[in-house]
Length: 309
Image (cartoon, rainbow, N blue to C red):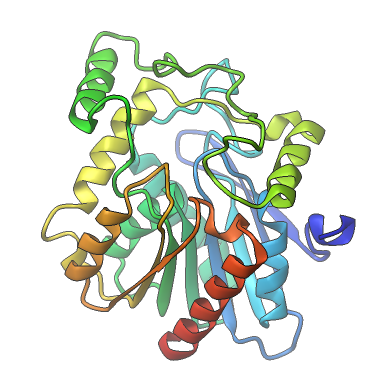
C-alpha cells in the first residue's frame, strides 16, 4: 500500500440525496474503466465506516472492470447526523436505512448503473442489504456479504439482557444516550487488542483517515441504535425471512469474529434458496485483513460473481 493506493481512485463523482426527513446522504460512483463493463457493484459499508475507508476495495473492483456505486449511511461518514453530538451513532429504526437505500437505488443506481447489478455489503450494511433483498428479491443478480450483522456479541452480558436494557432505556426517554461503556472517544483504538483486523497497515490507514478528516469519525452507538439493531437482527433470523430472498448470496464469515456470531451466518444460509457459505480465518473486517486472507476473499468473490451474474 502507498499514498496512491490509499486515496480514492480518480474519477469518482459525488451526488447528494435528501431523504424524506431532510437527511442529506453522500453518494459516490465510479464509471468502469472500459467501454463495455462487466456490470456494477453496489458497495454497502458497516457501522462507523465511510466511503474513503474502502479506497482499496473500490480500486480492486474497478480493476475487475466493474462500475462502483456506494454511499455513507445516515449518521456516519459525511452524511447528516441527527444528534448534537456528531460522534454518537444513532438511528430510531432500521426502516430509515431501508428508505435511504431505496432512495439511493432509485435516484442513483438504477438510472446510471451498467447491468448486471451486484451487491457487496459488510456487517451492518449486510443486515440492511438482506432487508432490501427480502422486499426486492430481483434487484441484484447476486450478492456478497462479509460478516453480516445477524447476531452481535454482547459479552459480558447475554444478548437478551442487552436487548432488554436498550429497550428500557428507550422507553425511559434515554434512548439517545451512549450505551453502557461507550463514549465519544471510542472512534479510535490502538492496533494491539483491536477486534476488527490483523493487518496493521490497513488498520493504520483507517486511523489516519479519521485523524486527517475529523468529520468522518463515529464513536459508540446510542441505546436507540442498539434497540433498533436488535429488532432488525431478530427479523432477519425469522424462519420465513430468508425464504423470500431469490437472489444468489455468497456469505463470507470470519472465524475469529469478535463483533458478530458466525453461527448465525450458517443458520441463514440453510434457509436461503440460493446460498453459499465460506468461513475464512479472519477477524470481522475481512476486506481490511491481511493480503493472504484478502486473496482468498477475492478468489471466492470472483468465482461466485462469474457464476451468479
